[in-house]
Length: 399
Image 1 (cartoon, rainbow, N blue to C red):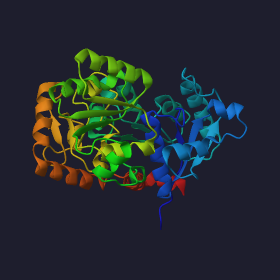
Image 2 (cartoon, helix red, strand yellow):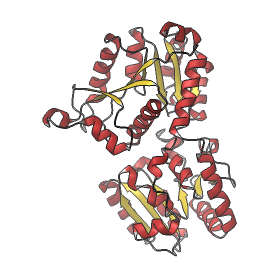
Image 3 (cartoon, helix red, strand yellow):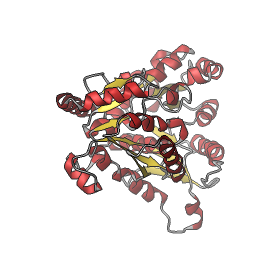
């Protein structure tokens, strides 16, 4: 007899659509669950346009912006409209949870928002929490308190984006059988059309015979993009092409380049998701800032989202030798791992890479191979199987 699937309420208190990476992660996650047949409804706060533009369709805008199915189940709640003040973080989490609880439509409430999960838990609902952060290290007292409550059958489990995050939760006492590591994934449709290096450079009007080290992603201060400028000072024959900054980031980094007298760095402002892949295909190497602060100091970057399209692009990857990176990058096999916070060593490692064409070919081929098992659909299937196999008693209640 086929096991039943639960109806899931996915509560997200972010602004949709929006360029923040966490919004992309939520939408790709929901879309992949939908694609494999899971019954999930995303409950989100209304944008200001939803209040003032009668014909505005937020669900349609989400589908276009994130390049996902236009028939996702999306419930838009008109509480406090989303804005830079982020008042919706609290108000939507409160109202969405109350809606999910009292509508009696759902078997499971799932969120990356701690407040929504705790509130639903205290209402007696079955809940799941998802996070990329090492919360056991960041907030040990709070997480130990949470871990004690996690023994309850109402707490179905926690999805972690890395083994590093999972270990953090184990340290504060979460039951290991309720912790599931699921690396994020790549949506291969975002990588289309697949381009050769020459085709990508022609499309972007880049030099065909030049050497490019490419970064794509956020450029706010806690991402330490200045480290890439520091590396560029040692490699004047290479061009560092950095894509994804907001105007204020571009201004800050331009000033830093000028102060360092660096002229081999090109800065490109933030682009829609579908316009990023040509920059990946145009690269001779892709780089993640080889610094420790984003994970160790700020705690906001653990196994960064950009790694998955980097792998799918099939280009050599340069990354810091940190615990999260070692989960997916094997030095000398599908990427090179360099010393964090050591611009001179990083530059020398890149110089050696660019002098070895066979190594570049090997790393590129193995990166693409690694990516094949890291799709969003594969992630959703792993979650589905874990949920079905791990909780037979709960599933019995869903029948």
